[in-house]
Length: 243
Image 1 (tube, rainbow, N blue to C red):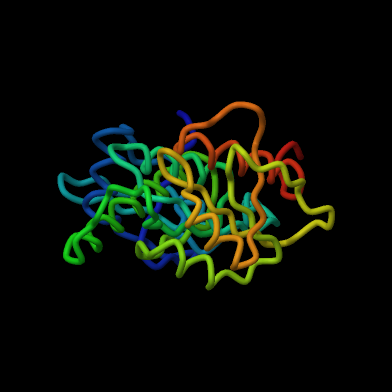
Image 2: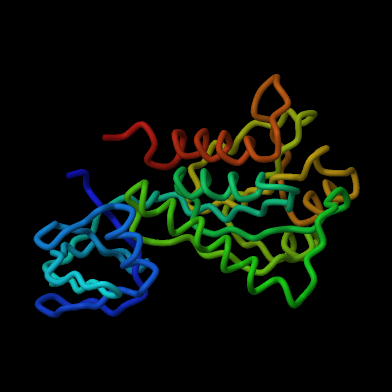
């Protein structure tokens, strides 16, 4: 049976038993076809993997025996805060899923000049919950035990001014600046919407200390750029390419 990793909101303690949330239990039994005696890895998003065993399966509940905990050591030493401009359709969903797999630490959805997506205040909690589910599922798949935090959508100008990372970068295909020589431990990475960052938004970023960089000779889509950028940064200053 393949390795199963699942996120749970339940409190875990070695030697105890835990009854999974209904949605997680349904996925474990009905989709993953787990049975009594199967070994499962649970994580709560705080950095530890818990080795568990399915002890009881009922029609509407699943109980696991909780074993020992371990640190999977899957977090990048480079702490990246991704400021990603909102986009239509499932592009934003895809981007944050792949960013999670690439090791991003924090994500903030941004409004900018060229963002057509406007979320009413009463819809934001539901949208945040949707995005959180996406990054949790990505963590289940890629082996991370710390779930990236997603903040409420905010104007790009405000976000840029609030960043205190050692390195602050924004992507633009017409920029030619080199990446910093000194290895940072934290990066604020700004990625624009469809059509790229406007001159006004680039000005906001520059005024806040951001440096414009390009990823190569080709223009990337807004959902592709974060993954490529995080991969380059991870290979240069993080843990990508390491065994």
